[in-house]
Image 1 (tube, rainbow, N blue to C red):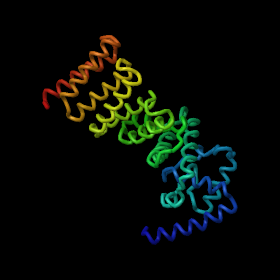
Image 2: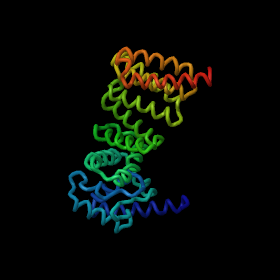
Image 3: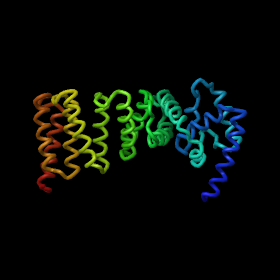
Image 4: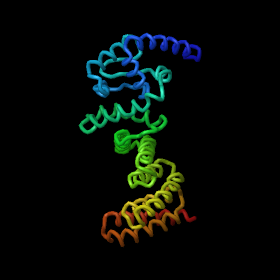
Length: 284
């Protein structure tokens, strides 16, 4: 569709929306919320309840929108991407995020696999838009659930943006140096190292280690875990001598703090052996 045709269609949609707004303002509110999700099928159960609106009210609004050809309605709801672009209003972005977060909290724990798969593109779409200025624990949690699901599916590249959204939300809600914020920044560093951006991972992990050391001290298990991640980042970035040096320090510290036979110590020792092998093949 060319720019001229798109402009004509957009004008027609605006005319239709004014008509619907006059007779059924809730339907337009619902549509503007849907505009922030992905242009893919959204299960109807995600929309009921919708805030204080009862399921019957939501169903009537959906049928009205379908009657005006503003959505495609069946067991799922779909909004065309062009219509979404016309409708997106920053006022409704936060509402869309909060509604999806509450729906995920209600549905996700017992959700069948296909329902989780259906929710993922909508969570990703929200993460790709500008961050919410007022994140909540619920909105942060939905990005974390989706990131874990994608990581478990070995789709780490797609999980990176979601972990960024969690870390950004934690920073805004809890503060730069809160342990939960640092935990997700460390997780982000691990993902970046594994998904082809080890240089960025190293920069992030160095900052996390410094902040974690200041906040929770150098011997805290979380600090040692972040140092292990930093060593991995060095290795993936091809900085093998630094990787070996960092792993030697982590092994020594974990053995001292946790014990030589602790699982974390043994894991770092095995990683050191791998780093030594890599350093033997690629000396700086």
